[in-house]
Image (cartoon, each protein chain N blue to C red):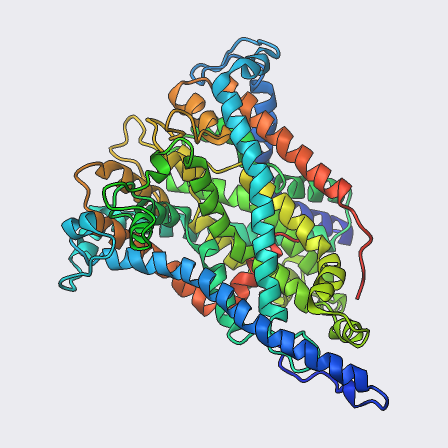
Length: 314
Length: 307
């Protein structure tokens, strides 16, 4: 029997979609949806039947001082990480592309730009486990740590008084933040750099003929034309700032999933994991997952909505 | 990554552009100062990235006492003893586990992702948009939203601490971006070849595997590299899904998880040279892939941020 053309097409479409959709629905979509439901129960994670408790997990979150500390730390990172990373990345991208010794129009890259690009991007491809071992050694609280070794060499401190770094309540969060900046700057440098190269040279040359200085070409031409990339960077860095699980859970003090000393580096993700896997409070952990989701969603919307500008086609 | 080196058109040669020559000289002057300045900063940051890495790799050749004494000690004799200790302490096993999972998950991600993206980009049918946006939406949500139920979902299939289970989860979580990226790629490919294949009596399936897949190779490579690096470096999912189960003798850990556990388990009886050697071993394959395909890697990873 010969099937009609349309039937064959439909069969083909179904056959090709069934496995990807099935897998995606089972392991991604359904768990996403379930989280909302479970966040309304006092589920311990053991037996499936659990009591519906309404919004009490969410009200409990409001009164949970550890949760509030963690939330505050995430918000702090949210405020600081994108700004520092974008400024540094933009600075380096500008240095790389426009800092060259141009004899005429200042749009030539520096020598060795390809080398810098490879090196700057490197932390992005390194596994977080490698970063953890690297920074554990660098932040060692005794004089044998890399950073303390440098500090002692520079005469900032002496071998008897090394900096505690990750063991210091006031510095620990900033140490984690520094790793994130170290990791991300190169990535956005490459992103911005590619965007800068797509700006037509004629625009710079025209500005030059009109007597523009380098600083002006950057502020008036490069930056506005890169606005889309900056906006994207902001959203993705905000998502990174809401995470921090891998670094905090394995670099900082604390019996399960770090967060120490004394909750000074606690973030939402580590507290979520502790509640789920250590305390067996699955429903409560789900409520935290929903909060992380809500903040991320809100942020993306705010960034995309309020920074919208007219885009230029070239 | 090429640097544009062509000379800009000599605008200064235009008649009556004397002040313009003046201006260009000043611009070049500024450029010289800026050049030293920019090289200084760029080199500093490059140093901040390379130096700590080299310092840790060097640590693999030191002795434990040397590492504990000073940051600036130099290996007294160069031996690879720490590397073989690291390997026998389990790095070899973690390595094999990771490879096994990734052979399954990357293959599945690419095949299933390409199939879905192709059908969604090239065929009109009811529900096409809903399926497409369903996939894309998955890329926007943080994993934490799904984490707790995911654990129990995987448990229901008896796939906790199983390589197949982890590979299936990796595949599922890689699909949104893969579909999104390949969808736009398939959509831009010329329709003529595709139609010619049908005129020649090619079936839908053959048209996909023998005509469209080869044309889509550049896109497949970009997204493939993206997935390889992403899954190789995954940490959160294995921490949750690959734990020791009752009945299992040991946890089937992947490399990232194994390294971190090795670090945590060491405590006071630390064997730092072995740990640093383990880190070096874990870094080498990534470094090799990155340095040989750095253009594709950078293009692939930054493409991930495009909306």
